[in-house]
Image 1 (tube, one colour):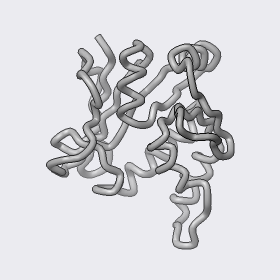
Image 2 (image 1 turned 45 degrees about the vertical axis):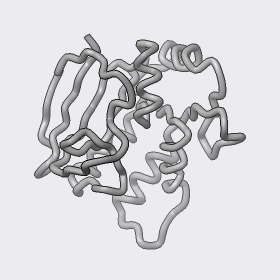
Image 3 (image 1 turned 135 degrees about the vertical axis):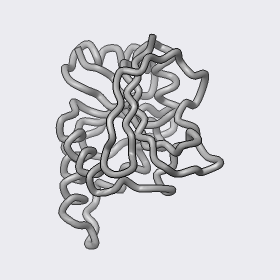
Length: 176
């Protein structure tokens, strides 16, 4: 049975914003290796549209960016959206019965499936489907934005903490 994991970069004051800070080389390498090892990823519409950036090569990319793009393109993706009419390569659109569709994914796959996007993670958490929350805590204060937890904060238990590179700490929590 697969495990559903929600993990994102977060500021010290609890916000996620991919444009406000980017991972240092050691953390980016971690994300490449994590993506290569994952069974798949479940996206909400907004995060999927952001991540479509990796569908096309860019001339200014270095080797690490090419490696991440290759891993991302190879990763099976499931996109939860009622507004999208279609999705790109290696992606499946989920338009209804989200709880059942994600429960079936977990039951029929092995390994780790990433959840991308706080609103989707909140919905899946309310269904009791998220197995782990990973906060990559950056020493940045944003003061506003989209919070890591898009709804009520679930009761959590700290499982581990690990320094990632020079200034990021990964906190891993499981629901109580």
